[in-house]
Image 1 (cartoon, chains in turn yellow, brown):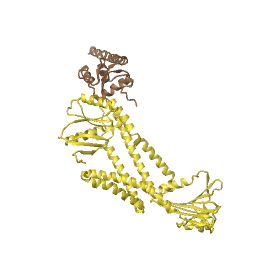
Image 2: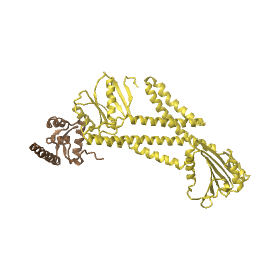
Image 3: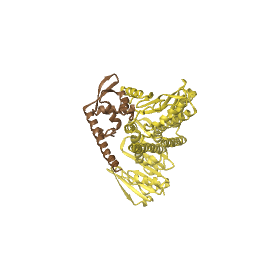
Image 4: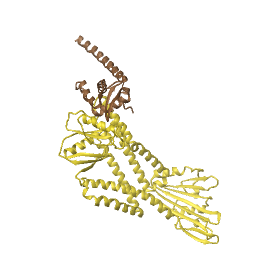
Length: 455
Length: 111
């Protein structure tokens, strides 16, 4: 990207053990007539110059300030180098670049063991988060996802996030393995009396770029799936984000953008939009669910004063009336009915809930709570059944005769202090879960089998 | 991670050895590079980066001390401990040379 003042900005990503790549990059730029003026992180700024063949040296100075302020040690270090025949070009935090046109000048570092130990110390320090904390967070997030397997496997966004974490984990591993291989081989080289050879980095960069592209493609795919499934909040938010980010990027500064830069910017913008969009999806899905699944609230005055009631909103296959425990006729009651469906190509989960209680009678309440989980994938079923057959806290679980439910297998989970029970019936690729307060009758069980096509 | 190239300076690299030799007399930091060149008859060169790092390590190990500080310009000189380390290294190298001499002179005799 060429700026208005004629300077050229280029992005060049490197690690501290890839100094020779940077040297080659700025040497080639100088040959093309662009002299390095400054750099900050991966952003290199060049000014036009006569094409010149120079020898560059990219150095890691351990005593330099982490904040980028040129401290006394750095000033003295630069003086030392200048005295030895090197010209200071630019520096950012611990990395300093020198040049010379004299090929007989002594190199800045002449002890490879010292150089290697400084590189190693700084590599570990700067990559602590990416190499060690990120994988830790990735494993923790994935474990968390698997703990709530039913939600995870029926939610595209959770699957996409999980895949993203796996790819980030792979990226970290590539980084660690690459560095370790380089470190061990360099140590061996030095022991054998050979000079340090910096990592050329091509393979690692290509691998990581492929990995990040796959990561982006997966997120984009699931993002589109969410929109196609009717998530209007996500669509609106993404349009708003696109308008606010893309317009400034493309229209306000478009003259300064080269085609390559436009591609890179598009990539980064898309990434930001997808991540932010993903976050909004996460929040909106839950927000919409809350209002979708809860009934409408009506507030009114009765003999006892102000009362409220929640009117049934969703249709469910088996309601309290169908189940044979019809709610009492009263003006002051609370009724909550919810039907929630979440589905992916891997599994589908249907969760139904019907609850009724009297406002003026705390002892009178009725509820049924049931779920249907389906999957054509055996490993998904195995994982789900494994989680289902583990008792919850304060509960006992046992496998009983499944004949009554007409199922392949049947588990009964009983909660302490008569807090109800849960039946888990497995029918081939379906798992039916029923939570009730009293043991269901034969007719009640048959009702579920018939309405949910369980047999 | 041990960042001393030779653990606790038990053995010195050529560059370390000549830097310490150069500091037998008080010398300004930046002048050491030239002095090492002269002392080793241009056989050994110390890069400025390596020199800076080694000076800091020698000061930390109390083998040299700062004598004159004028702004950022610092001069250094060997301490007693530094001289002892240098002497030890000299004795070690002398033994090595002596062992080599016995071997090669023996070979010469056989020839």
